[in-house]
Amino acid sequence: MTSFLVDSNVFVEALRGNPVAESLLSGLFHSSARVFINDVVFSEVFYHYLRLKAGPYWRVKKNPELVKSAVEDFEKIVLPLLAIPDFLEINYDVSTLAVRLSRDYDLLSNDALILATLEYYGIGALVSLDSDFEDACENERIPLISSAKDLEGFL
Image 1 (cartoon, helix red, strand yellow):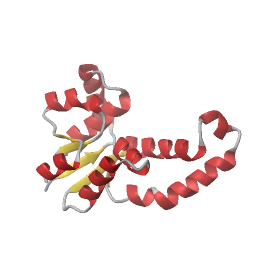
Image 2 (image 1 turned 60 degrees about the vertical axis):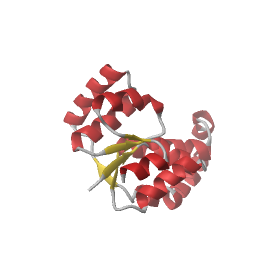
Image 3 (image 1 turned 30 degrees about the vertical axis):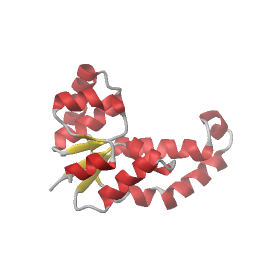
Image 4 (image 1 turned 135 degrees about the horizontal axis):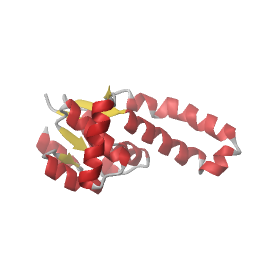
């Protein structure tokens, strides 16, 4: 069965109304493929949603009611969306693999953890709109899906 790990930027961009991200998620969720995220993806989506809804750190720090309202919206709107994919955990082996990927491809820590999760669990492809993954995916022989056309060709 085909499997995909979805990067946080696809969810964040879909929430912003990006039609490419929306079509990717729609294609994935309406397919028979297995779809996965990890705790980094969850954390990044949660963080970006709070920033979008509540504002920058210093504004939120002084207005806790903004956080509460944004979290309530997150629970209603985004949490059900993040419940669709299966959740993969990051363990020590994933973490050490992430260090190698970060070193080899100049990936930031969260991107390295996302890619390492995919490799560790043997997921078939990465779905991301982040060009930072291009070199690493090519060299690690991991398909990078960044459009509905890419996705159709892989399903």
